[in-house]
Image 1 (cartoon, one colour):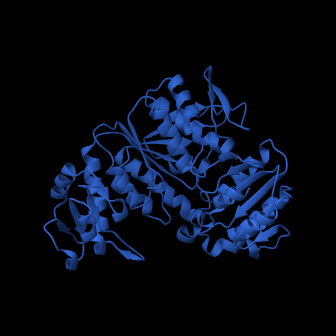
Image 2 (cartoon, helix red, strand yellow; image 1 turned 30 degrees about the vertical axis):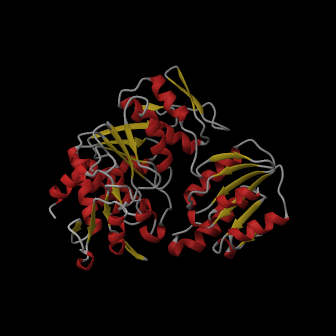
Image 3 (cartoon, helix red, strand yellow; image 1 turned 30 degrees about the horizontal axis):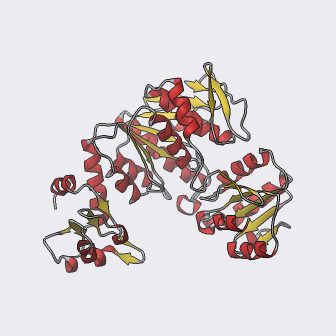
Length: 426
């Protein structure tokens, strides 16, 4: 089917579903395929549950006039999202980077919402499937979109840019994430720079951290660039120096005071990006300050949890060597007694797995961290005297027999480690 004809159907039935467990009446169901499933097999079920149409790519499942047969369902979903994006003449701010994408997205959204109707990427809908689904949530009431883009190999950000067609962009930083797919740090840098390359080609605007020499160099050919810095940097368009980073960030800018629930210098970088974007889009200091103050850490990212027996710093959504180090440094600087560091394996390290896990254990030792638990198969192989557990379940078993009390506990590891399941036992 021609994408313009499919788009006319989408305008009549503007809800897209890819999971029959979440079918909404009169939606359009896209029968996506995965490693362990074939969405075509669920097309009939989707119609039974009330879908207006189903998009399929296998002739065997073309059982009704409500079936739309295409060559590739995923490509059709992406094309539909791109077509929809072209119809909406609004700013689209794309966010890429190794660490801090979601926090930056939430902060920027919170700031811009003080003045505009904003759509921000929900949850982790940031890849080649989630991003099209996010774009298809846009409607004529939205004035700005804040879109997180997540890549795990080169050229993926380039593809996501072609779909989302951002007018503005932010690269948070370059770190050692997804090394299995990127190959090395140089691959990470090239991947994140794909957003800059798109903005350069299309005449878009980039928001850049002046203190990051790599980002400054990679973005130097973009005609429109606004800079920010978490230091009194005279070269930056927007720069501050916080007078407090722990336990919460506080700073002033041009005589106006700003407070955040976040802590640490790396989060000040995220806040400065939100401040720069807010002022660029015409918000006043009160609106920017209200937006920054309104964001509370959630979804396993820098959450502070006070239990009956302990206090927990839960940062267990994901982890890589770069984010581990800055988060450990931040936690170490926070006031508190009897600190315990529970570190889970870092996934997708590829050939760097042993090296990076050993390096992190050495980092903890070099910074005189005494009470450290290493959790996971990779951490169990490092040369270290720290306490080791092969699985999170082993930690739970230990905690059942050894109750911790009056501790300040840091939890961080890759998503697959599910360290948040420890909270119940702490």
